[in-house]
Length: 249
Image 1 (cartoon, rainbow, N blue to C red):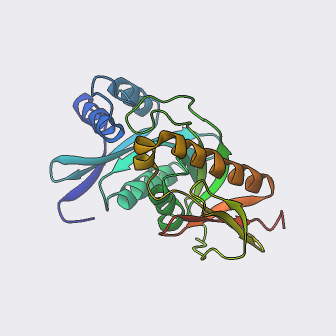
Image 2 (cartoon, rainbow, N blue to C red):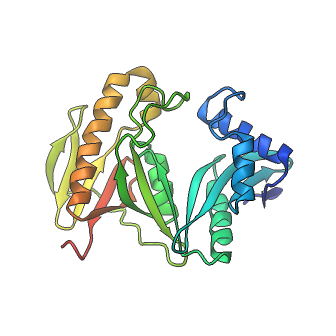
């Protein structure tokens, strides 16, 4: 982290209200209708979860919320931070979870958002382990409104993050994308799937095309996961790497 940047767990009412406002700004909702209200954050912290906040000086620059799960696992409900602060925020969550004896942490994200996929799979070494169709149902925030809420679950080994397979796509084109280019390629134990460059902008400008991308990528992932693949990497230009597990090979 840069000088003057700090991370702490938040328990006080004012601090939790500021975190709720931060999430409202990120998800473009009115501050009167935050996606994670302060009273909900307070209840989660009181029940044994943790609200971490990162500050640039005195200014709130990011926050994350995690709760305990079964069998020495934890679940990260939400995380959002300014550019460059995400890794430190996730490490703070990891340290909190490991101190409680947790071995893994799971969370979900929109699989069409390539930059988040790269952060989760490449920078952190998490693995995409489950594809969830329309997980939340219709959403009305300013980022997801008008789309189907598919999510990819990632599992993060808190002791030994998995390897990232940032392998260039090769092999036979097995599916075409809504823009006419290749959507999926396959060679051996690897499958590659492309996502749009900026799905948030695409959704705002052409929601019908964004929905076609959603459903096309969904088909690739559902078939791949049924066949024993897991998401293990993401290139800078928007190609997932999915690797078939040894057990399924």
